[in-house]
Length: 106
Image (cartoon, rainbow, N blue to C red; front, side):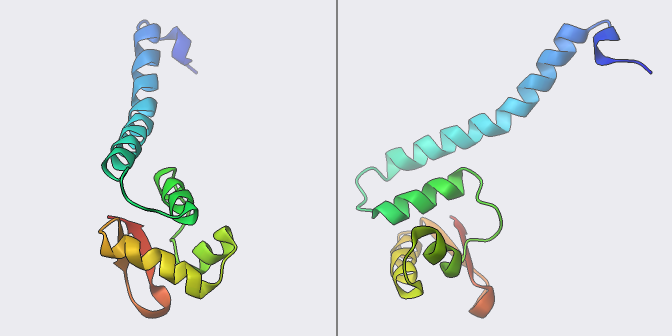
């Protein structure tokens, strides 16, 4: 069995692997920073800011109004009232319909 440190270009190989693993995370951070700079003047509720940050940080699964309500500890009606302006502003995009409706960053 050959180990990575036995490779003749090990330091170079190791650095390349590190760069590859950092690049997607760095892009995510830059995208998030650009988003907040572009929307700094938007009036957003604390719940909207919380959920948008969660989406940028890698929300697991689909964001539904039910999940929004549970995470933010609000009713489903309130969750929908908080989601709809984000869809109208083009910040979130509604996907599917009916019981399968979920939201993603636009």
